[in-house]
Amino acid sequence: MNKRNYSKELENKIAEFEKEERAPKLLLHACCAPCSSYCLEYLREYFDVTVFFYNPNITEEREYRKRVEEEKRLIAEYNKQVEDGNFEGMNSDSRARRIEIMEGDYVPGDFLSAVKGYEDCPEGGDRCRKCFELRLDETARIARDKGFEFFTTTLTISPLKNADVLNEVGELAAERINTEGKGTVNFLPSDFKKKNGYKRSIELSHRFDLYRQDFCGCSFSKAQREREKEERKENG
Image 1 (cartoon, helix red, strand yellow):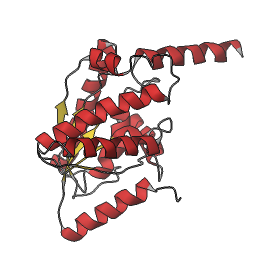
Image 2 (cartoon, rainbow, N blue to C red):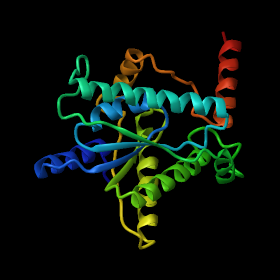
Image 3 (tube, rainbow, N blue to C red):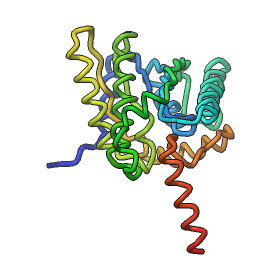
Image 4 (spheres, rainbow, N blue to C red):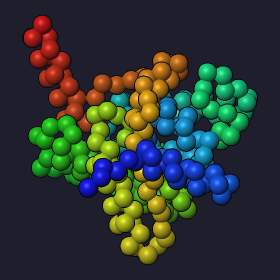
């Protein structure tokens, strides 16, 4: 069985839209500004993008507030480029569109309930999948209810995240929401880390001086990262 090339699938979708001379409405689940940076630079030329900041997995409210404000600041910077028509140093041109943002409910208890029984799973395991399902199910619901044609997530830009799992979770979220008979929405395949996407996100993070965290967001990932730091110290 051939491994799917999600990056190529996205390119093929974009080619279809360009041929049809249309820019579909896309709800982009965003985990943080650094991960969003490249995704938005790329997508805003081909889609009418609204960012959906829904991350109840960020269990410390102070951390959550810091990340959502950075997301809003980045979007404001990108929208200023569109308003001024100045894309110097950016991989964008006059096709770039303004970006909107929508903030989801911040209820860390929803995340803790979703991952109950999986607290001791290592990063990248079953706990993370439960977290992806929580966030992408809600993104799918909002996308359908608000009349978006597509939804996807910035999470595939991370080298630490499994694009196969994320795309599977996204496609299943679309299937579930579409069976409710209240409208339909499509999941947009992606693997944003490909073609130097992750490298570009680091460059853009430096350009805009974005706050970069070293853990995913939940208290479990933070604790694992702290243990890893201590182990590196002990090992010299």
